[in-house]
Length: 287
Length: 315
Image 1 (cartoon, each protein chain N blue to C red):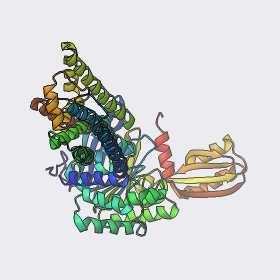
Image 2 (cartoon, rainbow over the protein chains, first blue to last red):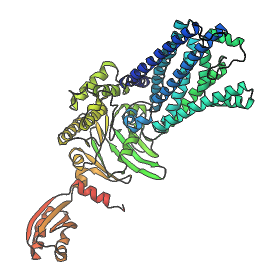
Image 3 (tube, rainbow over the protein chains, first blue to last red):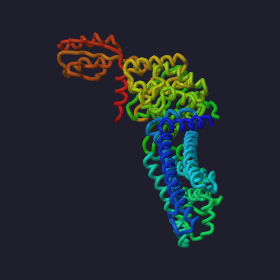
Image 4 (cartoon, chains in turn brown, purple):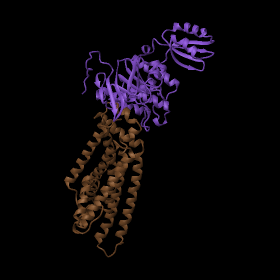
């Protein structure tokens, strides 16, 4: 535990010293500012009668909801990429640079190194996701007056999505160079996204095969499923209420249904299981 | 928790480092084969050998970075690689590298914390070893700004930061200038005086010769010779004679006095058992009608022994 704490703090300090936090903070603030500007402009346009002749409530809700959903989609995408960037060098870069040799010659078990790094990256990702998602929700509430269904649950689910990717990155890093690990992680991220899209279209088209493909991909790589679960919690409550009336309205990248507890538990078990594989992989690696 | 383990069949005091029948294979390739040695506290033990001889692999097994395929390696009686054994070790890997975003002081505090030195104790140790390796004024600078020599000094400081009982140094002076090498030699002698067991792996034979109490020479994964330096080099001298002309007649005249080693231009070298035969060799040369310009005797060097042992096989 002591060594793990040292490595956890080391990971946070490394992120600060290597300006990861600074860069993510500046770019994140720019993204939030752009979102706020767009949201305010759209809200003004909608309130000023930009969509005449349509249902007033629907025409205010839907564009703002689409903008919010797309904004959050970008945030979860950037968070996922950041999670991969931070995790793919956990072992491989340290081995390539030979910095790990002196560290593991200390009374430090390999799982402590992995766990300390994983938790450190996890803390950074939690902070990033909380600031970015929380910032967007504050904009939505402050400018639009909308409250969301479950902001905390949403933030936790986006973070869990990031931790899936962090765990993939850590596992690949125990055996592969950072570049290869990044490619694998990013590809899996994309595969899950496409799988989610197939499942969504299958649901619209009432195609059982496509729905099953979507579900299978969600089980194998739960990132998109976690995002969709998060998106339900992050949408304005008024939109969800409205969508409850409009049965035929579906949005491709967000969900109008809450996540099942079984899926969330599966995602947690998935992360724990994959991390256990990473520990085994690192322990059996010759340095 | 690991407890001290006796080596089967032995009752001697527990050595700081004890290696028995160590072997390591990577697939079909054998890196280390049947390596055995003991290093008591307060001894400097040199590990010599050409590239790929298995020296670094042996060190990596001792700190648990690599698992032995066969054999046993104990540090102060603890199984190597165990948490307890690693508490006792300071290790400088070959081509040691640091996290360049840290300062030298931060690197040492980080390693002190990993070794279990909490709070002020770790900070104080970091400052103390920085001074010891001559980096006292540069501890607050980023490692990325260090020269190769400074980085190597920091690596040595890192190995010493937790006051280890066993120190493993893999090529500790490869990036140092002559002054730095002298300082490291002095440091190793100080460690010996403090009762620390030092395993030194170096390509620099002169360094081994000057600082080590005992030496093992490795080749192709095996120890081909080991012992005290005076034992390994003792009893054998070398004679060198420069004459006006070298031919078979001359060789026939001098061969009864020693084993021919080499001839370069008009200088012949013989391995002789006793320096007193030098007079006989001189007489034999003159008896052949040759003119003798120079005649020297001296002890065989570690380099000669090393070359003989390492080239002697079917490489």
